[in-house]
Length: 122
Image 1 (tube, rainbow, N blue to C red):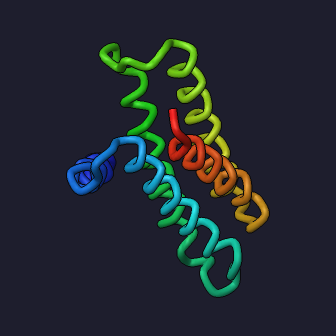
Image 2: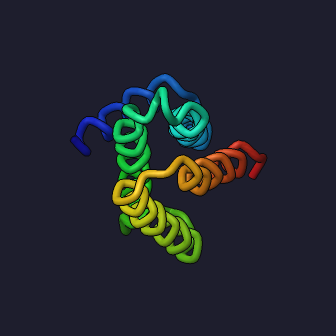
């Protein structure tokens, strides 16, 4: 399953001119899916697992990429992204154990904030 996420990431990357914009776009897409479930909890609660899985796979790719030795990012940024990824994973488990729409706000906010940061001029 993680392989499919990596393939989707690679396909999208080929269509996007800048990796930062690709990452921002994927984070935004994950946030939109989570927000849709949060906003219509009764109608879209059945979509929760798919939205969480998409988000988790995306973060798995990010964490895997950032922790590679050849990744050129500074060590402190790599560590911050890895730590944020670990938080996303643990929060996702908490949501799955006790699903509540309000709990999605944290993941939505993280994705939107990171996406906004990636879209900002370096």
